[in-house]
Image (cartoon, rainbow, N blue to C red; front, top):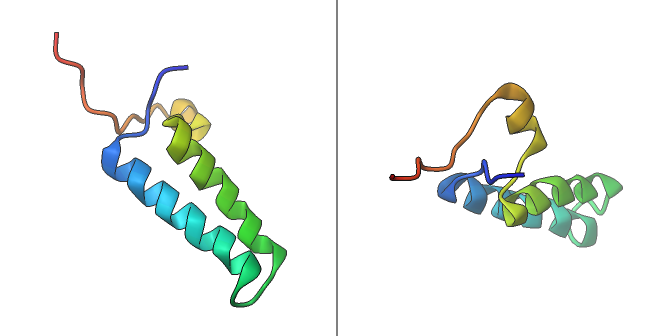
Length: 64
């Protein structure tokens, strides 16, 4: 399981995840906010299973 989520993508995922999770406690207070766990976890672990299925990679190329 190699990293396939790059820097900017990672930051955006963590921010969006935290915002969605915060909706559970403030705002509309619906359970739909828990869907924010998915982008949060994929941002923290730098691995997105959907990117693997789609053949995408936002990590910078390693220099040899």
